[in-house]
Length: 372
Ligand code: BGC
Image (tube, rainbow, N blue to C red; front, side, top):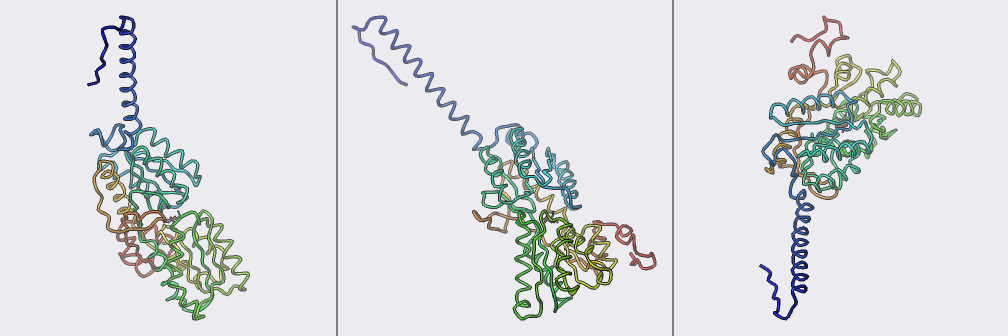
């Protein structure tokens, strides 16, 4: 305890002034200690209601888009899992606008969510979301797409490089020689770059040998089908319709590429995809698209919610994979993708209930339907 000595010679007035100063000093000291606790508090964990105070975990799920069918599944399954585990979940969709995604995440933080799950539109720009969340002690899970150059806490996705390899392997097996068109996804999406890495690892030896020739190699802005259509039309003009394979990075771009083909080429050009969306699987059984990559969404969505709950409670998540995001090796949970083509559609997407037999074969005469 601080003490102040007051000599007998000092007047009563002097004594009073010194006492006042002492009281003021003590009050200032207490205020300073209190203020520093307020600034420091959020760094050591979100102090709002929810996980840390024993209530339900509050999750903010920030999505880039609902454009592709798969993202609607992601949304529904995240909501479903949250209900199952008693977590509160709020979902916002940025529709491809980075400023909106940042603002929506700021709102989540202001409202006091305990953890964020972010499927970023732009993997670089979303680093600022991680920074803002961490300032408030809120952990962030990067969902499906990696948030680059940040200390993001966990990455939950499929094995994206492997998907690129599978697409290229399939194309090469079915079109071992000839002209190739490569259609990547949005350049702002880290997945588009990883897919291209995987595709090139497989295609490079065949290119070097001169077996295949890449006549067009582009990325479709925002994963747009219209972009894929334009890229394919240009390649057809350039080669005088001499194309053997189109390595499209997802089903949306595969659909765009197919609509650019003259009828005589439909079914004769090997076309890859990804997502096993209903329209793509229909095209596959109708012989228009050759393959897709089937990525069951349920394990992804459930793992994200379960991990979010753990992180919010300060518990550890067991993540054995690691992916470098330019800053750190991000602990990752990466699920296995599967090749889906005409030969195994029954044993994969239909068997799992991902799609119904009658929806997939809707445009095929009933006598040609497989026996369930
Ligand atoms: C996802 C794909 C999806 C694409 C376009 C990618 O990041 O992994 O499943 O088709 O984005 O939304």
